[in-house]
Image (cartoon, rainbow, N blue to C red):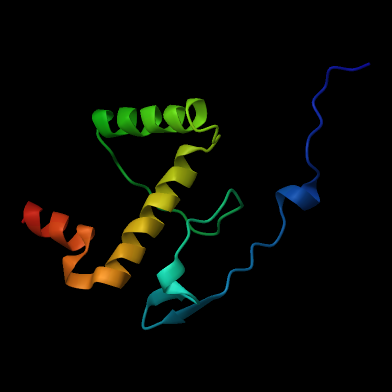
Length: 109
């Protein structure tokens, strides 16, 4: 009996990630903006770089460990960030001027 782990094949790793998106006036709008969801673990076609402070990174890692240890959810930081973005954008769509994002950004001005 070998102790080698069973790994997924290339078909599983590089499967198509077709998303129902349309580009309008330079913005990407999903087919159902009010029910935004962060994308699950998959191969993504776009990348951004975000710089965070040491404290923010530590807080993100603590949250990831809490999700795993307390809630039984094994997710990576990228998934957490995509979910957080989806939540903030859904709140902006629904509440506009009164959204958490607008209020927090105005507070920083």
